[in-house]
Amino acid sequence: MSSAGPEPTPEFAAEMVEAVDRLFKQLDDDELREIALHKLEGYTNEEIANKIGCVLSTIKRRLRLIRKTWQREIANE
Image 1 (tube, rainbow, N blue to C red):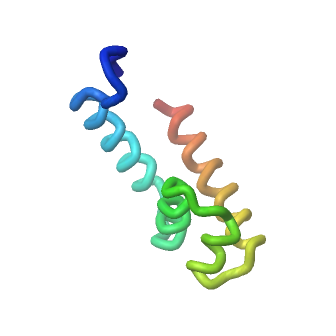
Image 2: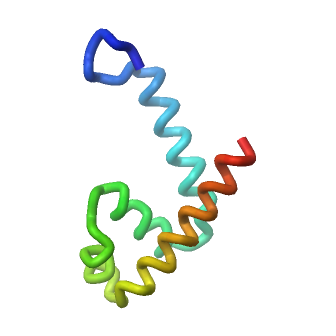
C-alpha cells in the first residue's frame, strides 16, 4: 500500500481479493464460509449464533476450525 493516501492501490486491492477468495475456498462447508464472512464483517460471536440459529459454543468451535484451516493454508504458501 502506498503511503500517499488511505486508499489501497488497485494492485493491492486485487491481491487482497485473491487472498480472501483462496482462503474461503479452503473452507469445505457453506456454513463455515457464512460464519467466516459474518466475522470478517464485524459481527460478534453471539450475533453470528443468532443469525445462524445455533448456540454460541458451536460458533466458537467452528471459528477455531476456520482459524486452523486458514493458518495451515498460510503456512503452506
